[in-house]
Length: 293
Image (cartoon, rainbow, N blue to C red; front, top):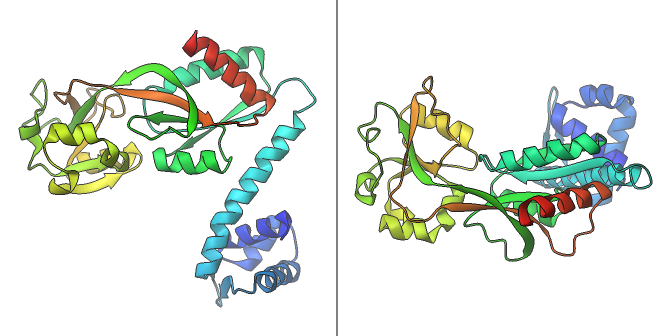
């Protein structure tokens, strides 16, 4: 199984057409078709369903696509790290995180580092806690920015000097929009839109006085933007953190904090015993100086 052939396979999966994929990869159609048939023979599985106008993936092909994307991403990351191994500090740093104002702390650190090391480049990958753990474990990102109550017991971490409040994000014409705080009884019967990660927060559930499955949950989300659109259209009220929603005068949404005694913390997380590239190691050293000093 060669990386080159996996790239051919991914091109066909994206284009859903062998001719278009061959043009994109600058090979002839017969060559590409033969490579794909050899790949199927190697696995002993049918990976593609070849229609007259469209190529689709079998269930085995869908699994290979996921794994191939991970393999290619890791190979490209490794190649980039080796390219800068013996030259001036530079290379790529991969950072995963959700949508939160705490990301600004990392952005400021990255900007300061680039002043002295302009050959360092950053790649941001969005995702929730589950997504980030998977990518960290597979080596697809160097660092993850996690928000409580994510389980990071298996990792090293630096606590960032940033906290956020839980609150209710809603349309400005909602009857609750004029309140200074939201109490549990205010939302017991409301249609709610919650983050997938919210299900892990036992303190929030204790405050609500109910298990989440006892509430009227109309939708879940892993990143905020689409959830905000749902709230704007009246699908429900978002239980989320401050500063992820656009609540400016031009927005239809507003944020009202929950009457909770605790705030959420953020952590910069990496794998234990991780072997970093020079660029990532430099980033970690600078992060320790800034956030632990």
